[in-house]
Length: 297
Image: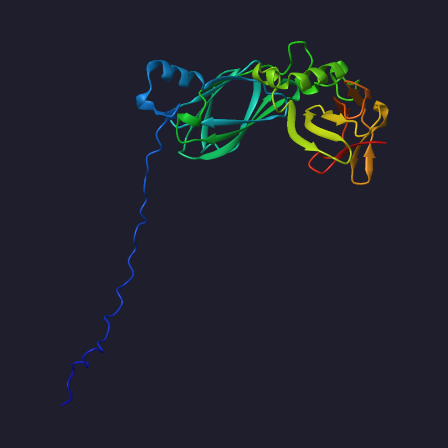
C-alpha cells in the first residue's frame, strides 16, 4: 500500500487563509514646535513672547478686487476688522473654517480642521469686494491673530487703485509726479504701508545690453494700468551726443512701442558718460513676461 505522506522536500502548502477586514492604521503626529528667533517657544523670555505675539497683529491695505492671503491656526481665532461695514460674506467651504460676525465691521475666523484651505469673499457697499484665500497652518508660528484693514480710499480721497492717474480715474491724465515719487521711494513707501505690492508691483530686471547701451533696472506695474521702466544709458560713441526723449522706443520683436512719457536726468552725454531715467506706458497692450529692449528710433 503506497504511503500517504508526501515525499520529503515537496510538501503541499496549506490552503490560503480567508480574507479578513483590517482597519487602516493612522498616525497622529504632533505639530512641529513653535520657534521664534531660533528658540523654542518654551525657551522664550516674557519680552520675546510679547514680541512674537505682537507680530501676529497687523494693519494692512486692501483695495477693491484685490487678493489677500490669510493664515489661521487651530485654537487661535483670527479677527478681521474693516474700516467700512460689510454687507455680505461668501465662504467657500464651511467645513474648513468657521466665520462668525462680531459686529458689522468685524469677522472672526476659526479653523475647523488641522489642515486645508478655502476662499472667502467679503462684499461692501458700492459693489466693492475683498477676496481672501484662507490657509490652515500647523501652529501659531505662521498664523495671524488680528488684522485691521484700512479703508478703500487713500488719505487724499483718491482711490488707491487709481494711483498713477490725475483726476482719480484710469484713462485720465498721467500723474507723473506720483509715479516718480513711487519710483524714487518704493521701499520706504512699502515700509510705511503707504502702498503695497498689489497697488504697485515692482519686478527686478537688471539687464545690460552691450548693443543698445541701455541697462534696464525695474518694471513698476500700477494696479490702475500704467507701467514704468527705469533704466540707465551710456554713450557708446567717442564724441558728445544730445539725446531726444521722443526717440526712445520699447522694442518687442519687430514691434516698436512709443512711451507716453520719458524722463532723462541728462540729455547731453560726453564719450562714455551715462545717465538714468524712466519711461511710462499708460496702457500697455502687451505683457512684460516676454523679452524687450529699450532702443533709439
